[in-house]
Image (cartoon, rainbow, N blue to C red; front, side, top):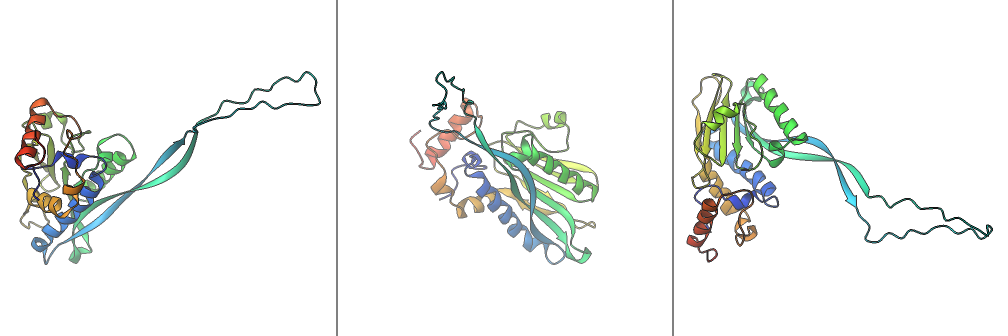
Length: 262
């Protein structure tokens, strides 16, 4: 079964699906790039780890409060029990975020280009965004190029470009940016839900020519080889905000693919 959408499948953005898709997509990008990188470069999967404090509330179904009785005091006064608190188990949770490095083995595995597929935590305030932006600055300081692939409609952008520059792009739901250290510039690919994912230029080092990465081909391969036809629930609107015309378009795509009755 092919994906019913010509580009990004908005149903993949469901929180229960996204982590699996994110990991598979990164893997398929590396496999796609590797033949074009040989023999000078290599695509190497890595993990970025950060820790968050989390708390899970435990709420009792029934609380029984009993005042103690004192048999040796004829006129005993009831001592009030404290109100039942909500108990929270505290833990420090380690979050793993896969990413891809293009390295140059002959130069001591120097990082030439980092390829990031953004996660929800990267686009909302908190440790995940802080960790991501810190890594972004480290790569910039180290002279590495950065490719950011944002296939999530929700959240705040992470690209270094000012918001007014992003506003100049055609209306878009998704964004890919290629930040080059030499020359210092950022190339933006904004695209709507109705469009295919772009073919992007991935920069290398030492004046070597860019290589082309067809993100739509990677997405299709990832979607077809994954569990998504079985897991995605197309009997409801996709997650996130879409206007009436966009929702109508989604239904039309599903009907044309033989999914649903409109």
